[in-house]
Image 1 (cartoon, protein in one colour):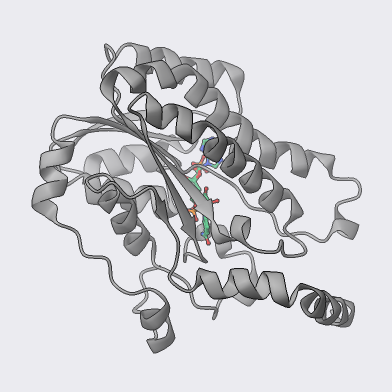
Image 2: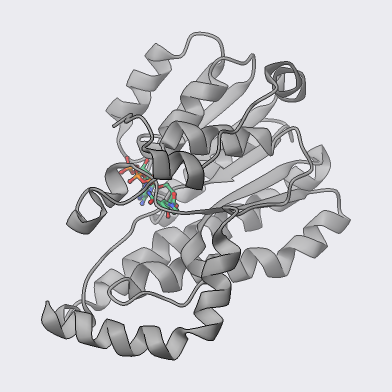
Length: 278
Ligand SMILES: NC(=O)c1ccc[n+]([C@@H]2O[C@H](COP(=O)([O-])OP(=O)(O)OC[C@H]3O[C@@H](n4cnc5c(N)ncnc54)[C@H](OP(=O)(O)O)[C@@H]3O)[C@@H](O)[C@H]2O)c1
């Protein structure tokens, strides 16, 4: 999974340097929840923060992978919460567990998610795809945050949302379920952010391009596409924990946004031709 960057990737994704002293000072003794910690970005973040004397609460369905991480991480205290965040009872267990931390919850990294790439014509009998993406990418973080905002207010905590650059651009075909659900949470989060900020809760949105994780493996066209490494993303997320940064976007996204505005109709015409050819 860890592949050296190509020249193009080096240009698109310049290195992120972390001040480990500042990070360590900021996170010492803190309670941090990482959802989706069993693979990809969440797993790398757990490994990176695992070098610090903090308490990581790792959440995902695959318990064995979380236990493996717990074994691997030597410095941080690790608590494993194996559960499906779409499930009311399991979400309730997680929230009950958080309440046992005596108001000491400092950071939530909302990272768990699923993606689906499927033509709308292959989705006509698959309403469940739209429901399951909304369940984990939208309703689960909303439910978790509704329960934890009062706790985060008490600790002047931080919420970090792992979003996608797709929410900033013209939506791509074949990703309707994924993009709509990520957009929904991004809009929710942006809408509540000023209120949360006024109560001392920091909010950070991380808009990611393609990242080389198990999520993109089923999509063959992504095999050779430029993609960030999950470790690089873990560094970007960690850095926001000791800086005041509210948003991360790749430096080149502005060109994509301008193109989305200016060339949308040209793009729609050419994509119609390309899709027909497939
Ligand atoms: N990879 C990319 O190109 C890319 C780009 C932009 C944004 N992102 C975002 O980055 C985040 C992490 O994705 P990734 O690329 O690291 O993918 P990944 O390797 O597939 O990881 C997804 C994580 O979410 C967890 N998860 C999924 N459904 C869950 C559920 N119902 N309950 C609890 N945990 C659940 C998975 O654990 P279990 O299966 O063990 O439950 C896994 O740990 C996602 O929010 C994704 O939208 C990814």
